[in-house]
Amino acid sequence: GAGVSQSPRYKVAKRGQDVALRCDPISGHVSLFWYQQALGQGPEFLTYFQNEAQLDKSGLPSDRFFAERPEGSVSTLKIQRTQQEDSAVYLCASSPPRKDEQYFGPGTRLTVT
Amino acid sequence: RKEVEQDPGPFNVPEGATVAFNCTYSNSASQSFFWYRQDCRKEPKLLMSVYSSGNEDGRFTAQLNRASQYISLLIRDSKLSDSATYLCVVNKGWSSYKLIFGSGTRLLVRP
Image (cartoon, rainbow over all chains, first blue to last red; front, side, top):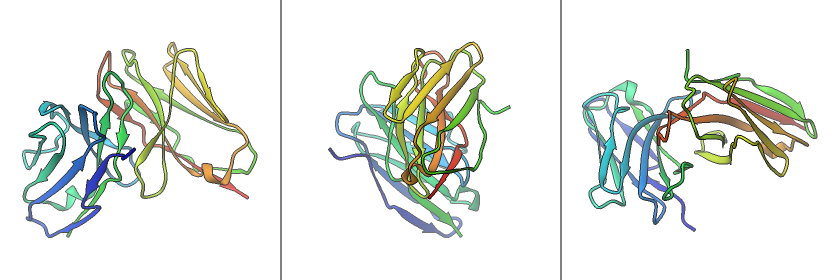
């Protein structure tokens, strides 16, 4: 079956631009997660949705980061006024009901110049 | 101290070798444990969940030691295609959905 999909796969933004990253989870997965992965590190948790409810946004690094999932399926991670330190791979994952394991999309590689 | 610690490697082994990775975690309330595999410039892929009784999937065996708070992964009869980074993953605490990833151990299998 179809896995988690993300778009765009690559994004180059000038410092100060706003970006929007999209995630389409596996059908039937109510839980959706966003992670940030820096080079040479493991993914770090950003935020968690259960259906359309954002239950945890404790990992978002600043108020420039905003995520939404208005209809409980597709999610968008928005970064306003991008900074160079925002350059990373942004991974989306979804989880089947009543299970802990998470399945990742291919990620969006963001480069801020 | 990091919540999940792994030896970064690289472990450089010949084809057919047996190799083992360990990982330690700091939160004694963690209940869910996993090994993920990540190829260069790709997403992490679930390799296996780790259960208290230990579990095996083909050439891969995972063990959990709750008392010492460490997890191990053993790969037997290494293949060239096993070359990747192996991420140790633990949930944040009791019933927590939040996964904490180690920085990964790099494995290189040579012909």
